[in-house]
Image (tube, rainbow, N blue to C red; front, side):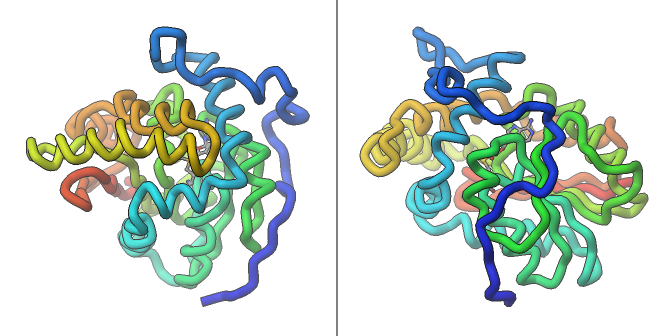
Length: 260
Ligand SMILES: C[S@@+](CC[C@H](N)C(=O)[O-])C[C@H]1O[C@@H](n2cnc3c(N)ncnc32)[C@H](O)[C@@H]1O
């Protein structure tokens, strides 16, 4: 495991924006009726929200996942099943948690995210790029693997992002995407609702001083289509052998596929 880690500025900014202004940074995420944002508004408020959450983001992840996210992330890295030294894009890398896991595993990570705040708080030696998942700043077939942690539900159009992933991956390249899921089992679903809809927003309010953001995060699972639709979308974008497995009673899912 490589012990070196630096916090640094993104090496390249491909968003064409100079950063977030005060007005955007203080934007509310949910509508007055608690509705989830859509389209361009979603892009703006989600970016501003992560800029705001960045300093406490990793600590909060450990707390709200009860430490389980380390294990889910390890499974995701292993599921890439690529030779050591592979070039792997950490898509929507946030504070680069998965870049560090990839590095420790022996891959060559590169991180991309559209939130300047998250990238500034990233402790990694991996190169970081500020950019949008819907228009990746990489040539066709130039990447061996893509990993994506808990970001699918934040994208505006999943089909566009899956197609971009397929474009930049080489044939045989691998995609592994982790995200929240709704447990099928009734009891697990009830427990999940109590924790994520009740306790997590409270913890967010107390520990991150942002109850609204930590209401959005569990609510945003509603953006994700069901398993069949997700797997079909991957297939439609150019991935073969797409598969899905779940962890922790079905509250987290891992989607994998191979670029054909
Ligand atoms: C829940 S965080 C996950 C961060 C990191 N992947 C992890 O596993 O901890 C979601 C991340 O997706 C990023 N994001 C959302 N939409 C994006 C987009 N269209 N392009 C790039 N990054 C995006 C956010 O800025 C945020 O850092």
